[in-house]
Length: 227
Ligand code: SAH
Ligand code: DHB
Ligand code: MG
Image (cartoon, rainbow, N blue to C red; front, side, top):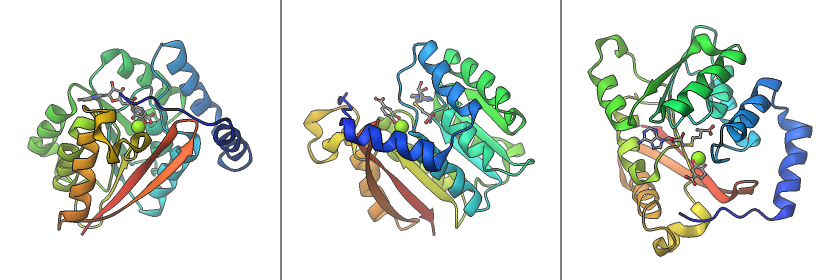
């Protein structure tokens, strides 16, 4: 695992942007604190990235969102806040204790009726979703943010469960630069590189990737569009 190290200036700027521009509501702030209180690692997306997810959900007109990796529900709340009232977000989480905290957080945020938390290994949940006749509609938007080893498997599922125009966002695609030196993290970095290579080569998608700095260190995200 790479150590995510943040420079003080990056954190100060992120805090300024959160306060001046992003304006996370009380429920979002509570979700971050609840994760700390429950002893979860502080690996939720930064507030400015969460707001970007919400705005991408809105701008793409998404009604059905799939998330892989729930943690305490911080990114799920952002995305669900961007959905219409009859929109739906399915989020995959394999730790029941994370799902329990996330359930309380999405309910407290007033968007719980849009959120369905599926407990179990995401690959099993995704295979079940593909077979479920009640899920005949494709997902409009997918956020991939779980075990990086499986990033290319999740990308493949996102494409399969999507349709032309589906937007796919993948977190953590820079990983402190370990994508150029996979000896820094031989578990996760090869998984990320595999997904980035697929983003460039797979004819089913078109993609870009953006590197970021902030409280979560040096990292970034990729955005793909199913063609
Ligand atoms: N998207 C969240 C952060 C997710 S952290 C946010 O920004 O708020 C990654 C989460 O994925 C953790 O809660 C972890 O338990 C979960 N996870 C890891 N591997 C998984 C797997 N194979 N299946 C389902 N969930 C997994
Ligand atoms: C880790 C996972 C994440 O999804 C993230 O955004 C940052 C760190 C991790 O497993 O260390
Ligand atoms: Mg992440």
